[in-house]
Length: 253
Image (tube, rainbow, N blue to C red; front, side):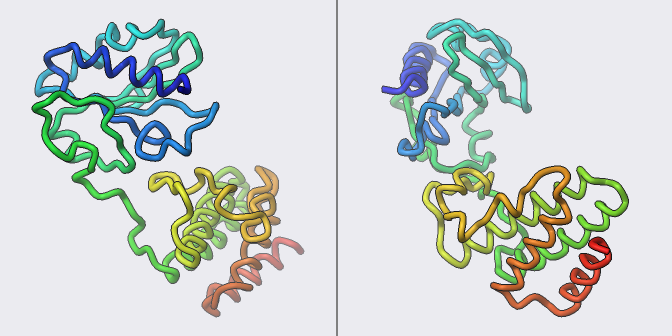
């Protein structure tokens, strides 16, 4: 058993002996898709507790440290913590009531432990996973094109980092969404972060990321390449297409 799974089971054993805990849910590679697990996986989980008990599991770490010493801990969101064990296992967890869980979007959860009277369906989110406003080819294509256009103008203004986030991040996320729509769901897709495992989903000849994401000083080259990639595969609207070609020419000049 990999160390992260062993640690998760150990935490489950600790929680099972407490009267104010309801369940422990594994997420990510320690959830319903264990084939994702490798030597670089961290440990994500939800601790489901009774009403009024969350503070005990957020403010106190005795339950967390029973399996091993914790060398680092910080609050990364409301009701959530990240921690590092001395043996190198990194954990990210949230402490939720059943009502909180019903309002929390998540996917791919696995029940590691639950008490006998726990409500049914804890591993299924009652809240929808966030999706773009329109998950269509038209939306993602135009989102990529506008991101390239705005990004190039920010590059010309000298806002290179802001430009990189549009050209080499947002536009590339839109490209990934287009590929997903055109070829079906890639295996083990992360609904919250499209870049996860993307290199395994698409070969370099389909998704040439080195050219689309060359780095901080490569915004113009990235925009030129990504725009050409889009033009080869999709019907780029003439208005934004003409504007982008003229903008790229002016930057090159």
